[in-house]
Length: 221
Image (cartoon, rainbow, N blue to C red; front, top):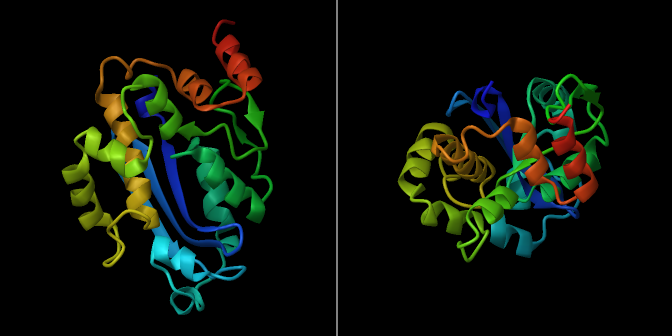
């Protein structure tokens, strides 16, 4: 089965370690297209500083009445059981997620077929993949990659269909999740990368050489 036929959940969080997650976006991918999305504001667990607002545009009063991210356990645990998570520079999302729930339920590894793991990873990391596949790009910034890949118009069309009004730009969670998801979809349209296995993409997404070698070796047996 091609990796494009596996359901993948691309995540983006707005927030910080200080405030906690104040907005999340999820884009479900399967068969080379967006099949589901979800986003909402989350009540912070700490202070939203003015410098945070300057980045993501969310003020304390905008999130004060929202449920905590912790109330969406069933959604996140259920997504992880159905497919691997993806993010742009996934270490950030992984850290923020683990600060709320250190572990998910037992879930398929996806990088090692037939095995299960109690971990939010392994993650697909669009930033790591593009750095390796397209080293000529001068920046791994999400906006820069979207522009360089000619995906801005497609992203804006998806944002109009899926993102809330007022949250249709970079540093809004669902918009950023759609942007990262489009980077993965573009790989799936490219004959150089579409045939790669999901295990290989997951292996190339990790910076841990031991984990990378373990996943690559598992494909040989």
